[in-house]
Length: 233
Image (tube, rainbow, N blue to C red; front, top):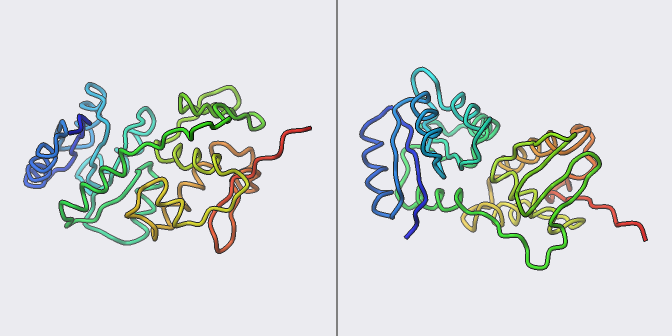
């Protein structure tokens, strides 16, 4: 049984009640919020591990709430919405969400998405890259922290997992499906838009010139590759 703490943020009391019952039965600790503002307040007090965040709430909407949460929180965030357009998915991911679930959703799907969002990649055994210096960027894989230009850069949990996996397989082209399944889980493989958004966000955070990336490279028709120069002999 897990002890992860989950916050349900939705203005519909029936949805909160059904989801809460499901999560409590799985052993999660569960909190509820009706608005984005209330979610911010509750999370600042209790620091939830994962937030289920409705995209379409009155007042402070889900996108705005997600952006605000990402300024200070590493919690996993799953956006919930009745819309399934790719544009909405990209907006959610751009705002800092780790995943996206369209209403109505089944219990098995929701639980699988929660497990995937809470999943953290362990540091590869024997990995020599406990820290990695890239020009003015320093990545610490032990503490999961990144600094650039002397200031800490905040990565979402999945951004860091994706970066860690690419670095662990440096200089090797990794197909889209393999990246998705390694970082999100075996139920993923076709959500290429996730990678587009996450790679773009990572480039903005660790590349000197995101429009001309030096490290996070696209392999056309295949996937992505982390280019790590060989150390001088």
